[in-house]
Length: 243
Image 1 (cartoon, rainbow, N blue to C red):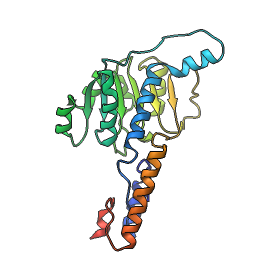
Image 2 (cartoon, rainbow, N blue to C red):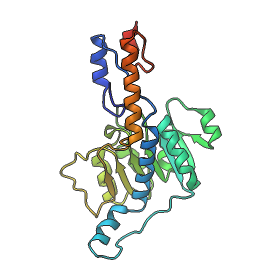
Image 3 (cartoon, rainbow, N blue to C red):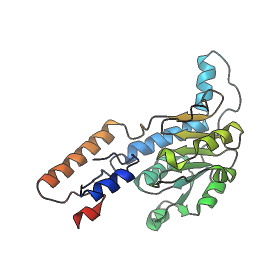
Image 4 (cartoon, rainbow, N blue to C red):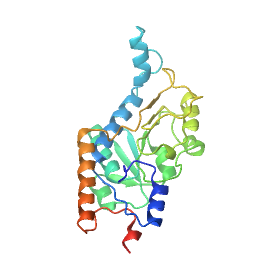
């Protein structure tokens, strides 16, 4: 069994080669991850890290205060269950929703006043960009950052590989985007994170709630029980083993 947020492509390939069935637990971590994404957006927009350091050291507010979130344009890359939950949670801020997905859900878009656009259109028009794509290659690097506004809030609560942390660090430091939130361990040891740079990281804890973990445990157990009883589990990832 694998956590759906893991970089698991090579392992799935190896399992398939040896005829080992792999299942996942889709959807059970969607709402917790969306909640974490919303919280990260607010922290970055509000320069929470800067204000924490200044206030906890007995200093008055320093530098730019915070950005408005209401009535802004939200760009969602990947409109699976997590992306759609983010849109739902952020709708209370009366945001305009732009979206990108390889397989657009036009019915969802129409029902939620969302508009599917190209990636470059999303980068240039969005005030807030959040990534929930199931891709395995980088989506945002220097070129993409150059298309964004100086007030762009960028959040990656999907996979670290999707964003170039070094390029983003330099962009935030130079004031080319407002800030960055990453739900992955920060691996750029020579690029220190402190109160002077609006970047917040967490150790991939977006789905780490009681409901998220219990949901994964239940679905994993059901898959094992089905397999032992000679049934095909509901969510087989490598369907080639069934042939």
